[in-house]
Structures are given as C-alpha cells and as structure tokens.
Image (cartoon, rainbow, N blue to C red):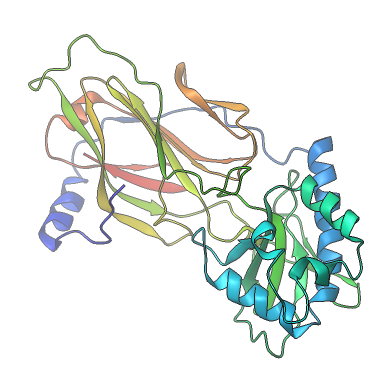
Length: 334
C-alpha cells in the first residue's frame, strides 16, 4: 500500500468542493460484535499471567540495566509503536545477567517459562510521558484481555503496591505496560498490511462498464482505544462486484489523524460496501457483514466497530467525491 501524506493543493480543493455535491450513500445498520463481554476462561488465565509478570517486572525495574534495555528496545518500534516482545528481550543482556534472569530473581526460571508460554505474544510497552530511564523507575500497568477495556488501569510500583489510573487519559509520567501484542501473529511475525478477501464475481467487467473505487480521505474522530494499547489499528474491509480488500490504515492511529491520500481498491460495476473497525487482535470469531451482505471474512469479537456504508455504483461513474459521516470517522470516496 503506497500512501502519500499529502495531495496536490488543486486536487485536494477540488475533491473537497466536489464532496458537497452528490449524496447517494447508505449508512447501514450493522450488527457489531458485542462489546464489554466478561473475559473468557482463557482470557482470565492470560490476565492472571500478565498480572504476575507485571508485579515482578515492577520490582526488576529498580535495576538500571533492566530499565536501559527496555527503553532502548521499545524505542526501536519494531511494529510501529514503542514496544517489544518478551521473546526478543529474554536473552538480551542487562549488564550482569540476561533480562530473563533479572526477572527470575522473584520468579523461578520454570515459573517464568510457564508464564511466557501462557502468553505467546507477551508485549512490553512504554506509554505516557517521556521517560528518563537513568533516573526514573516507572510503574508497570496491565493491559488485560476481554472485559471493559476502559475500566480503570491497575499499575504496580517497585514495592508491590497497586495503583489505579484513568484508562481514557494517558498519564504525564511514563508507565511500562504489559499485555498481548496486537500486531504480530503467534510466531512473532508482523501481520500483513493488507489481504485480499473473497470477491463477488460479476458477469463481464468491461472497460466501458467498470468504475474505479478509490478512498481519498479519512477523518478519525474516535479510535476506541485506551492509552495502554498504544496506537490504534484502524482497518477497513471493502467488498463489491470485482472488489475484495481488507487492510490496515497505518497512517491513522488516533483521534485528529486523517488520511489525505489515494487508496485504490479496484474496479466494479455495482454497489460497494465499506466496513471499518479498530483491531484488538485475537481469534477471528465474528463474521463481518453489512445487512445481508457477507464479506466472507471474520474479525475478533473484541474488535471495535467504527462504521459501515454502502456506496452506490453511480458514485464511481464520475469524478465527484462523496463524504460519508459514519459517527466515529468520515470517509471520502470517488
């Protein structure tokens, strides 16, 4: 996916002026995945493991070498955010011992290995304010799986005391957060930026009857993401005759962000459905659909629905832009 941050001024103005014209879209009624469900038994086990890990990491952060390693490795932003996988840190040196050995001072090596096996995508992130790792020992917070993701955040200090933080407002102080990485698969490999999805075959897409479908701008108002999870993962699925695409809009990560570029999805001779969501990772157990229209793919039941719409074929026949408010975001297509 090639995304330019800006468009030429003349094109941008013409697109936005044209957006005031033709309005033939349908904002669909969608059955979104249920939210704020109680954690499953598997998620509860993961959360217990994360809690134990957070308590021990909070103690280990009193060691300058542990703080330095975490600060340096999370700053590399291997997945686009200030975080690192435990598996990539475990064997690295903190100066006198490995990271795993530093943690094992309070947990046996066997217990640590068991805990890490329970959370294959165990993630260590730095959130909140700027961190002077040489002199500041931060609290360690838990980003749990399942349940209400905007519940108060539990964080531990080096003395083992628990504190509560507001999940909706990032603190001014730095906080280390442990959780499950949302951007990698179970092997630790980064998830692909985009994937094809089942395409509805149409009779005969000819050059004369085929119209290009393009997204030219997105304005994000609410990313449905607590600060503990870092940057939001905004995805869109696009489906229609001759078109099937799902991808991560990486440039849009928080409210106020916008995509001002052109993303082409293909050519169609019929209506096209758009389904937007914020991905929280996990298993694909919720079928994506817009009304009776099935995309033939699934996302996780904990993913946050952002909006959907059906764009009529007539919108793609000319050069005008359609601006469609979907509540949590607005999309512009032509």
